[in-house]
Length: 378
Ligand code: OSB
Ligand code: MG
Image 1 (tube, rainbow, N blue to C red):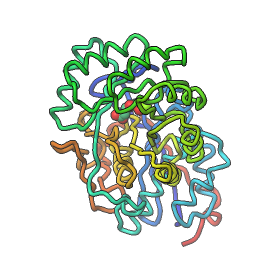
Image 2: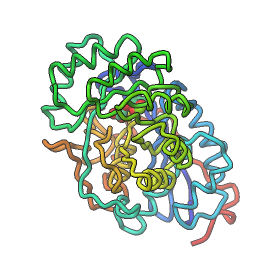
Image 3: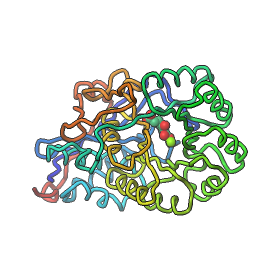
Image 4: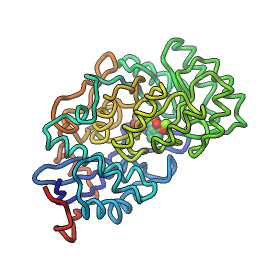
């Protein structure tokens, strides 16, 4: 593949309603979109880094810096035969997986478009639709949260995830259980607790939750093993799993029974597939996490979720839950049974709406190879 140029673009889009987790509140998404140009075809990717370094170490600003100064020059200065080469090429850059994944996923989209093949098919997906849940942020009151739960269940979503933090946990989960005794329910702590909170987890353990996501430190495995030994509810790791080796070690050690896979967190499709395969080998189900993506990242998540071991509903939901108007056509929609159908168009399947993208762009930079001869052949 001859990569001619790569465009970085920061877009800003307000969320329809703020999204609050244990680490903070998001009102405005600042997202980097990546466009990779090759012989008349454009591949699209999105850096899923949040605005500040509170989920992991990455932010919109660090992603721009790492992309512009390290990732993009490496891509433009090397031969790329197929999208699987990209992750290997970027390996010397330590960390910054979300920055790397934006380009990696764009090159997968580009390659699939070249082959006129849907991306989900190219990566080996087997599904015709994916199963969807929702992630509900921390609210001002329990009654507001209950209203949101009811609304999303009416819309058809198959499971409810709520964010918890100290002071917004046991009573809230009990409150939902009282109103919705049978609903598929889980909670996500984003690393807000320690083993000193074991009592809390023993009580949550009585509420037949599907799983508890990332209860302990973002870089921990050992304490999660101890917690998993103390409770029956499966622990699901999110922040702690950065690659397939992390997944293998966590599973072998008994730190979790379920894994959340995010394209950004693991550096793109090549590693996400490895995490998926490792989990499958150990009979550990996975599901697709979200990072409040625009339609571009959402479309990549849909393709990823088509792999066979995505056995649990993911945090991939309709565009209209997040944004007044998304960046793609059609918008992502969920049917009355909480499913998203996979499209059969080439690449991510959804068409980026350039007019809409222009409207929300705040800065753009086009990067070209300084030495075009160095940059691959057909
Ligand atoms: O931990 O899964 C998470 C959003 C931002 C940062 C971290 C997380 C989340 C979500 C939202 O849960 C998922 C989504 O709907 O995009
Ligand atoms: Mg999470």
